Length: 442
Image (tube, rainbow, N blue to C red; front, side, top):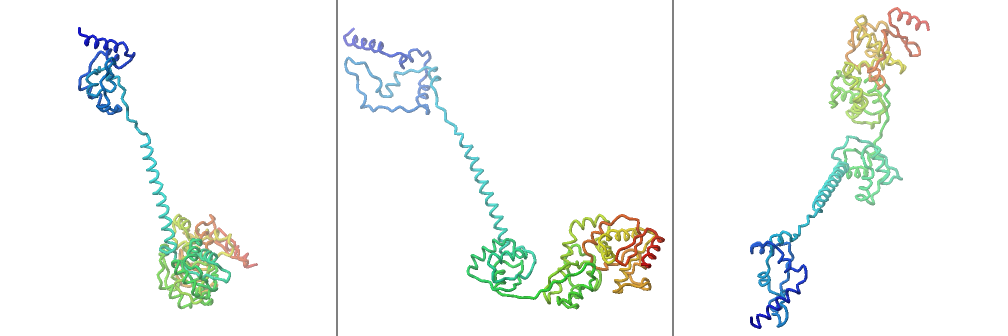
């Protein structure tokens, strides 16, 4: 063996003795399986393995004589040539797993919640826009007109409140804001101004810049007044002339779903001109005047009363006819349901087919009837005609309508009035004759 061969072997043995425990070389020597070049290449190209910085060729220097060969800076091909890896070693190499970010799902939920929040806010804002637009521009407003009085002490705020109280506007704060922005510096002269709810905000402001003073009159119509009495009263108060009012009653069309059965001529709306206190203009429009009476009737004869009417088996007009007779006959409020019971008892009786209500004859004559008047040949005379008269004989109030819908259950078929306005009620003709003698002796 040459000196050079002995030196190389000596270096190899010396290097083998100096290898530390657990080194890569020792691990590779103990491995039992070898991998193919393809498997090795796949291992080295594993994307999860951190790339090793390769030294340049200039950095590697061959070992000096007497020094062990240092493979740390060997070029990669040289290192791969000396390394053999087993299949177990390949399986033992840990692989980095891609971390799944749980925040992705959370981010989606946040986005959905944010979109829902924006949508909700948009819907709320659009509702307010529609509401305020209808208020400001009067797209859908009730047909209400009234007179608003402005005093020297009134401000934009107090004027807005007065318009709200009169039903002209709904939101006084909004109208006040409009006046402060659009009409800043404007003053309203004291006076009376006619304004309508159908006007938009600019039109209301213009209407209140121009005084339109119209004299008004308050009229109280008693319960039980006939159409003729109401017309006379309104003419006396200078609301309208009798001719104009009768023309409206006989010819004008009034659109109410409950106003289906009407009388004829001057009695056409008898029973539906609801007795109450009203405020009219002097020399008012006759159709508007009659319309106020009918609108009030429709409001008072509400859905509850209409439902109660259906339960009786009678029509609304028949209930009004009965109520009108109760109104004209009753003097005491507590007697209304009892008088109603007498009327219903006779309507259901074959023995007493005639109502024999004096007030129906008085309606014909315009005065209290005498015994001779009870035989008058007229459809409204309940002494000679069976059942109900053809129409109401007065305009009843709410109490008489309620009595007609809810009569007291009695066995009475007769009654006679005392001088104080109260009545004596009887079940038989004999009892009734006795009651008449009692009243006559008073």
